[in-house]
Image (tube, rainbow, N blue to C red):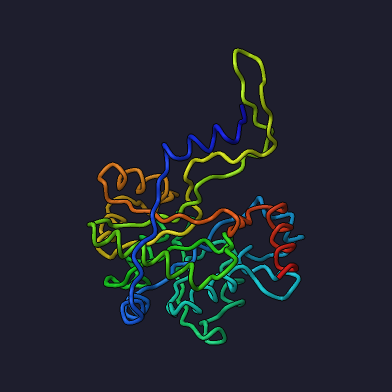
Length: 281
């Protein structure tokens, strides 16, 4: 009896996925031209502070040893797929993000900025604020991306597959698409136990719970919900409030990401993992 086998058996009961139908070049070009990417770059990043070594900079704009930054890596991923319009949702050390990427012209894209009013508002409030101030056009599809979630391997294809899944969901009356990893490792030794007897032990087992990886796609029809649900005087993430409501209404679609293609850079450990991966490439 093997712990990971038991978890793998569980996976089929709590998460099933299929590939979305491919779209034509003209369909993709039309979708990309009418899409804006919101970069969530307003967080305080206290867990990442050790990697900053005292620098007064937002972690997404922090210069990596190779001279790059996480926000630039993310921008290029979408740019190379054909999406050229961006809005940076900023607050803490907003100046460092603007200093790093400016208006986007050096990267061949267009970047505008939406700064949280007076205090950090969370992802839900930041998107609502950008809708209110026009940084997110009312008729555009919206991809919300966290630049500290770094994706590798065939990035342009990955972006297109996300959007193909969203188009499939939209055709089924879905309003949003969440990008999910089918399982995540737990940072501990997991054990399979029968009547107190440990029959198997496995370090860092993959728990097969489909989990959000920091990219979401929203249809313009959903924008009024942001304005109704999110109060700019409070810090609220849309993952905690909006996703459960959409799931209950049957309006939330998803697309699967292979876990090997994703690094979450939230602390010094994630930073070191990113540097190792960049050096390999």
